[in-house]
Structure formats: C-alpha cells, structure tokens
Length: 460
Image 1 (cartoon, one colour):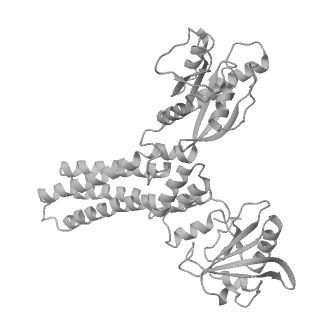
Image 2 (spheres, rainbow, N blue to C red):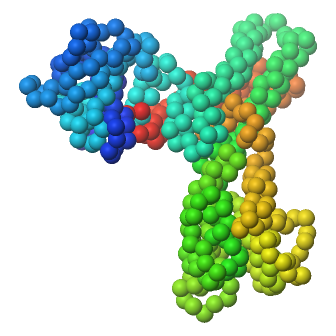
Image 3 (cartoon, one colour):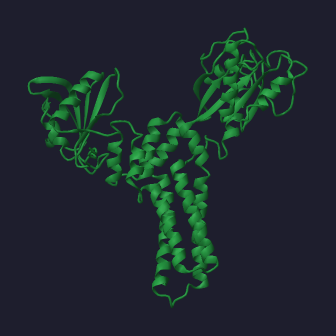
C-alpha cells in the first residue's frame, strides 16, 4: 500500500534540541491547533501565567505539563501568533528540563493529544510554502546549522537575509520586462522593434549576464565553505607529518615520535584554516619496505594523496633528499601539491633545494606555519580571500540553474543580434526565467523540495 503523504494542515511537533544530557530541551509545535493542543496539558502557575490560547503573542509562561493528574515536567511555554512566527502558523515552544526522558514524555503526550511528529525540515518547509522565506533562504538555514567555520556561518547568515534572492530577483525582473516587451511586439507584428529599443534590450541583457557571471564565480568557494577541503600530508617516515598535523590543528591529535614509521594508517582531523574547514589527513611514511602492514600503509597513503584536493609533500630539510622521494610526489596525481621543507630549526642538508617554490617550516618552533596556511588558501581559493566580505556563495544546485539561465540568455543575445523570430527569442527568455525561478523556488518540483528538506534535522 502506498504511504500517505503528510498533510500541511496537521499540527506538527518535534524536539528541536539535540539528544543527550543538557540544561534544557525545547519542543516546537506549529499548526492551527498548536494553542489548543498545549491548552489541554499545560497548567499555568503564577498570577500572570496563561494558557497559549489566552496569551499575548511573543510571551513566555511558567507552569506544568500534565497527563491528567500526573505531572510530566515543569516547563516554560513560549507563544507566537501568526504571521510573526517562523512558519507563519501558530507556534508554541515548550522548554523542558534537559535529558532525553522529560522531553520524550512531553512529546509522547502531545502526540497522543493529536499532534503529528514533524518530518525532517518540515518547519522550514512550511516557512517556505507559506511565503516567509524563499528556497535559497531555506537552504541557508541548513547551511547555518552545518557551518564549521565562522566564515561559513557568516555567508549563510547573509543568504538567510536574502542577499542571493535579491540579486536573482533583480535579474528576473529585468528579464520579465524584456519578455513583456517582446510579447507586445509579437501581439502587434506591424510594429518592428526599433534599433534604439534593441540596443536597450541588449544592454539590459548584458547587465543580467554580469550578475550571473559574478554569482557563478562563487560556486567553487561556496563548495569549499560548505563541504570543506581534503588535504593530505605525505612524505618519508620521520619527515614530521604528524607534527605538522598537530601544528595545523593547534592540538596534539597524532602521536609524535623520533622513531620512523609511527603512523601506519591515515589519521583524519578537521581544522579551520583561514576560514575554510579543512580535513587534514596524516598518512603513513612513504618508503620501500618488506613489512606487510607498513606496505599496506604506504599504498593507502598514495591512494589518499591521489583522492585529495590538495597535497603537502613534507621533506626533512636536515636529511639528504633521495631520488624516489620526489618520484612519490609525482605519483600522487593530485591536481595541486605544495612542497614544504620541514625542520628548518636544524642545520639544512646541502642536497636540499632552496627553490622559491618550496615553503620553509619548522613544526617545533612554528616558523613558516602561518605562511603555509596562506599558501593552502591561495592554492584552492580563486576569488577574494575569505577574510573579505562575501554576501553570496552559491551551491551546486544554484550553479546548475544559473548555468542553464546563462545558456538561454546567450541564445537571447544572439537572437536579438541576428534579428531571429521574436517567438524563438521569447521562448529562450522563458527558459532563462524558469531557471532563475528554480533558484528561489518560484518554479520547483515536489521531488526537489523533498531532496532539499530531507537533509534537515527534526525540529528545524
């Protein structure tokens, strides 16, 4: 039997805070019956405390959640009347004692009273469907939750404010006016488009393309901020790879020992490097060996380096460089590799190259570590540095839609230049408008919404 799709008319409830022991937990209800449901189980305590249906919007009330005469928990109830709520529906938030049991007991009772357990992201979905936010802002909510650096959080906050939506809607408005102009000429074919009008349309189109190009240039940086960078550290045993990992993390994550071959498998940890979340992978030392376990570690190191976005090849500057050491670096097939000379606090061996491309560091003293971080950023960040203000960084969904929009806009431009039939130009304009509508959610599908909101947590 086919599952029944949840109704948007239901009053939904979910625990909005993470599981586990804490000072408090919060349950959120949204829907037309939210006030009435809580009325049935909330007993206000104190002269000014009220049940939700009797309360002024945006007020908090102290009392007890009860199942008949049995007290489930002592709570604070916050009441929000539409339209000034997250979902533009009646919303109640119940703060219980922390820990899994008190919130679960209250949740189970509300479900018995008629509420439905919310689907992942359903509160944000309702905010979108009720017109409080558009699709880019809904995605920004998820970006804020999953942000791993302050920069990522800042960009998500700007998108939540509507920075991306504003730029997309401005271009869409211009294209809509162009379409209206063309359709007027289609309806009245005796009136040709004058050369001046044609130039104006091309100028408006050119401005829109500039905006699209500027947004598309942020795609790579947006992916880095949202998903992070995979950085592999390779080199001979005892080159200082684990020490470099610890330096970049600013904590002792890997065991450091003067004995070669301490690391026999990959070790992963995430660091914030110049505003980018970087997954750093410390690998086993590269060398020829007959030890079965160590040989497997060497193969894993090579595989990790081949799959990384960026590789740091760390060389011990106090020891002679062997021929096969540089060959191993060439075998990584990584698109980008940085050469770093470590142990600069020790006397340098005469065989070590002093080329400008090699970064000089000391994991003991910290010399050159900040320069290395700058080099990591420069190697992967094509635009302005993350320390500069960015209002918008698009994701892969936006990129796909904007690329299709650009393709259609180029067809419109060519059509105007060669005086193609107006019906064909108008068709390309509609395709461009449809692609832009996908970005903000004005043209979308149920499958797309399911894909986006299924990535949210319960209670959001």
